[in-house]
Image (cartoon, rainbow over all chains, first blue to last red; front, side):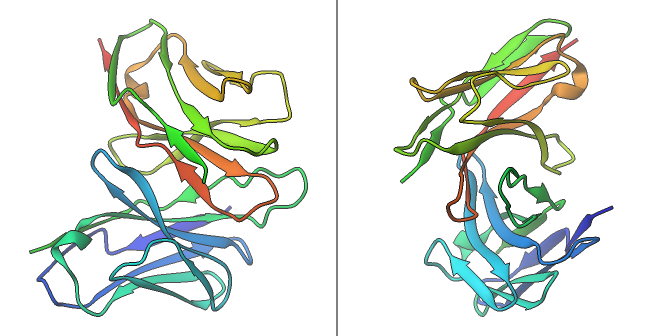
Length: 116
Length: 115
């Protein structure tokens, strides 16, 4: 069966420090991978998605970047965190959509980032 | 651009009763998918139910069913016989068929189930 692991679960970082959140998927090959940010009252905001190794699409210009060094690994990074980067970050994966498949997303348990 | 609107930020329901969560969306496309996701307090988001826009029949999954009104661009979720475990944040989402792999979410709605 497929599983998704995301870490760390909780992170407290000072402003200006770097960030690295990691997500790995097991039990599937060539998944689509996503990073979402969830803020209270604002729903889920898609930050990045990737349909293959080295292929990253950015949805929102911001202080963050993403990389996909391996097929089932997705990393969210920042060189210098801002206060506004605080939030709950969710990694997700989906299978490549073929005719008749619906693109269901499978989510990790999330990472709570607090920037002080 | 496609948008998804959940106008009710919070709702409550008594255990064993029925509740309906509303969702509207805006798109100029004709082929797409709609989803309801549930996020319990443990935080892991899971799929509740999905609907293909080309299907006229409303999707059902046990106690969960949808009322899909394509012309009105409305996609409500009905939870029957509400249980304490149904308490969660519920998100409505839209995915364009054949388009980019991007799911667009609403802002979510917090459902409280009272014993």
